[in-house]
Amino acid sequence: MKTRRSLLTAFGGIGATLPFVAPIARARAATGGAAPALIVSTWDFGAAANAAAFARKRAGGSLIDSVEAGAMVPEADPDNHSVGYSGYPDRDGHVTLDAVIMDDAGGVGAVAALENTMHAISVARRVMERTPHTMLVGEGATRFARDQGFKQQSLLTPEAEKAWRDWLKTADYRPEANSENRITRTPGGALDHDTIGLLMRDPTGRMAGACTTSGMAFKMRGRVGDSPQVGSGLYVEAGVGGATSTGLGEEVTRVAGSARVVASMRAGASPQQACEEVVRHIARLRGDAIRGVQVGFLALDTKGAVGAFCLLPGFTYAVTDARGSTTVLKARALFAS
Image (cartoon, rainbow, N blue to C red; front, side):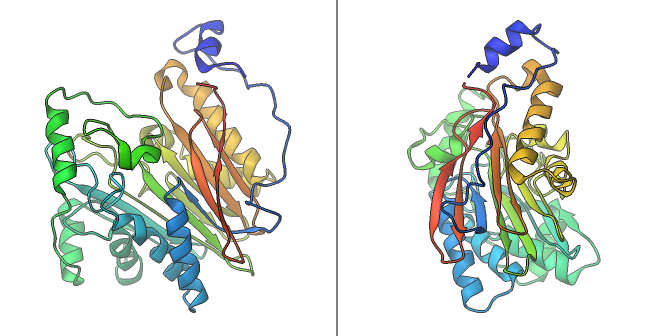
């Protein structure tokens, strides 16, 4: 496979329009086995989230109950520095959370720059169910969480604070590709960032999804990425399927990435083809600006077919079938490095 650098050099460097990589032979949908997928989520830590979602559904929960339960797992994990509690703070030392939850009937709720509340996904659900709005941000989101009875607590753990103070020594503000898979062994100065996106269907083809994150480590105060934005970090559509994104959110928001994936699926593309199309579009659009940047997409259609594709190798995702069996898989990448 050609590397990203060789393609950029061959086609004129910055601003060049990148060609498609030679077509990859189409494989059957990656479902972790012969059975259609029931739940998919981003990164290795998605396996635990899928297990919680599966258990909630088996206990009689709705799809929204289930995707919420799944997203709550990494939100509460102190070893996960890219989601929820113990997330790395912004450059001013504040942990701020973004989340969105969505079903295929048009129900949606989101929060951005939420503080001092562990389960941003649950606050997002309250926005969906108890307000006329689709998103609350900043101080308003935090006040709403208090009004709804959510516990106020500091999310900045000693480990995350140390990482922030170490970062202050150099203030090296750049994302690190695939840091999600190095959470428990990342040195203190590493720039963990990102999200978990989770998609789930039921046997009738109904869909729901959730996405939650503490955002890019040491981001500018007030920065919001793609995760809580409907159509960027997450999109679900009745009769078609859903998609979620991961990686550097700014590159996803430029193209409304998840909505674009679902639109391609609506037009007849498979989930895999749809994910590949948007990643290639980003590469053509952005050229040298995405050097070293990771962006990936994960999609699930109403019949359980899965697609995943990314810019750089390293993006992993968890797939759970109707029996509750989960497999973690590596997504194919556009560039070799």
